[in-house]
Length: 102
Image (cartoon, rainbow, N blue to C red; front, side):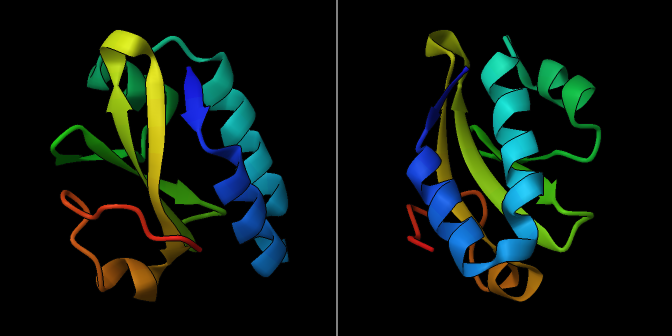
């Protein structure tokens, strides 16, 4: 899968150093994935939740952080829309959030 954008993950990890290893692991796992649909996403990440409009929520670092990504399966591309703490996640509409820079 193509991930847009790794820069977002790096910026977040710089601000939250405890997420660095978890985000790197998520990034490399997704990069190697070849998901055709949401079922394949759930097979890779059983805690991933589909929230509508092609968006999935991933738990990062033991569910301490949340990452919202829009997945376009036909072109194998993931767009990171949001990454933040649970408190920050609770303040956004996961299915419609545009892009929030960390």
